[in-house]
Image 1 (cartoon, helix red, strand yellow):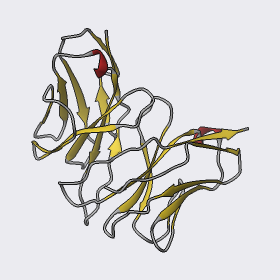
Image 2 (image 1 turned 180 degrees about the horizontal axis):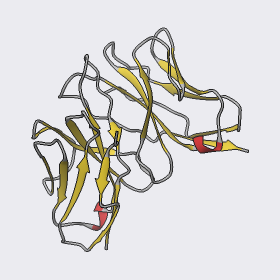
Image 3 (image 1 turned 120 degrees about the vertical axis):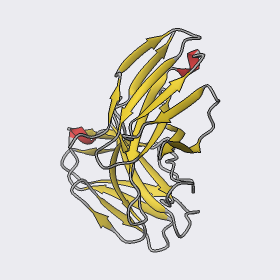
Image 4 (image 1 turned 45 degrees about the vertical axis):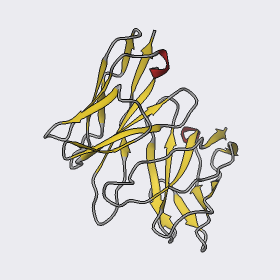
Length: 114
Length: 113
């Protein structure tokens, strides 16, 4: 049973460019959450997708957008990249069951903006 | 979500038990205590969670005080591979609105040979 997978593992972009990161959830999971982790900090919640809709959003600008596909996989898009967007981007998948939900994380995509 | 307080770091000897404390004095009745750990540059790994009873799994034990204002994660026989940042998080798990994880700075556990 594959866990959460993310692609690519590493990415280098320049300021002003756009980037798309991808996430495949753990088998049986239908909810995908995205987090940004700057160097030396804990992960910060970006948004969560369920049934192809954004269900909850953290304090991130509209440059950050996402999408969930019918197979529950998800993409994170960041437009007009800034140097400060350099971070580890983490995807977590989950499924609500019996009133509980545990998020399982992928290995992350490390983005460097030059 | 309630805030948690963890000491910034601790160490323990390999083979000994590691007891990682967490304070969550403002926890609400419907909030669970979750523990994750993150080994350098990897994604966070789920360890264990609980509501009010003590919990044990193959990785660790979670001891929650009767008033639920604090908890302790116990790694019974720490190994060098347990060196990581450990995050204590309190959260509700209702479907949808408040299911985000709010990470603090965590506690850095260093296991020494």
